[in-house]
Image (cartoon, rainbow, N blue to C red; front, side):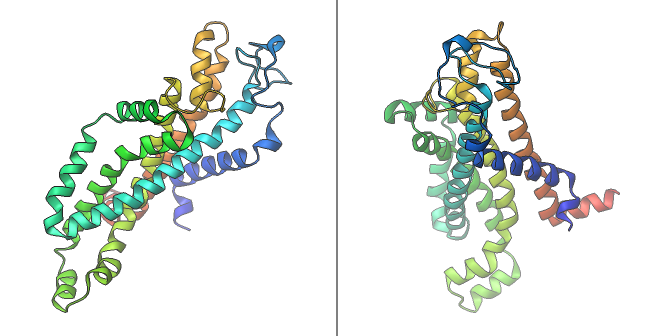
Length: 276
């Protein structure tokens, strides 16, 4: 298959599949309860019993990293799906219904003007730290980005002759959007969804690192790094291993998005073939 011959897609998909399997099988892969406190084992370097060492409370870092993958992947998937769903609906409405374009996009511009991290911190401070609150706080700034992308695609598609012909024949708006407009948005939508997932994973880690994300008792990569910054000079592995997992995950998602963009964008594919 053509998709398997693209190294970016293949690498990104394999890494994400491995992380997803590890997250699902976390109860079978962890060696010690990730929340078990063992003060006598605090700040132990990596050994055969504790593959990633232990943190400042004596908790097994390997177990916390494996369970932390669940949080990161769950946040990335939830934010991506919700942002794509609402962004698609708003972008279709703003791009095809002319009188909605101005008001809707001004609202989207207003949301985009608010720094995402500050908005997330404010929402978590008001509603308390939880997985749902963090996901909602991250998804709100992502919806306008998806909506603007879909709107730009719809604005170009609605001027195509086949769309104008369908309008002239009296095709109803829902059927027109479903048959002629929506298929043209799928390729950029899939690619944008991967970028949203990568941004969400990184933002969740930043919020947890700042103490405004997932509750500290729940294992997550951001929480692990936040707790390890105090011991960085004597126990750098507490930050190193969660940080490496975070970096590899975000890299894999971005490479998957880049590869899908190359495969799904026919204009880009033609330019690459022409260059060769």
